[in-house]
Amino acid sequence: QVQLVESAGGLVQAGGSLRLSCAASGRTVSSYPMGWFRQAPGKEREFVAAIRRSTYYADSVRGRFAISRDNAKNTVYLQMNSLKPEDTDVYYCASYRLTNPPEFRPTMTSEYDYWGQGTQVTVSS
Image (cartoon, rainbow, N blue to C red; front, side, top):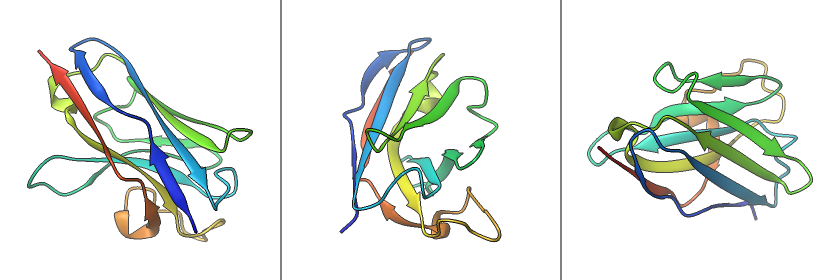
């Protein structure tokens, strides 16, 4: 059984930093593309970042956020710097459904088959 367990988010002031982690079990993060998404109440879940052989970012976070993984710990991270109030959301990590997709579509939620429970990040102004 695959489980993705995210670390606690938190409350941070605008301009601050926060690192989220996602510990995986039942699936090897080095074998599957992994992603981070976020969702506000009443809105669709949106893509934040993904990692495969390369890294991919939403325009809104590029240059501020960084996705990485530690294969030894089977964990994926999302380092968030220069946080803004509009980054306030519930953040989810997810595992792509294929190990070597012929067509990689990292921004599409339907391409991910396992999700973490979500963790709240709140950025105060």
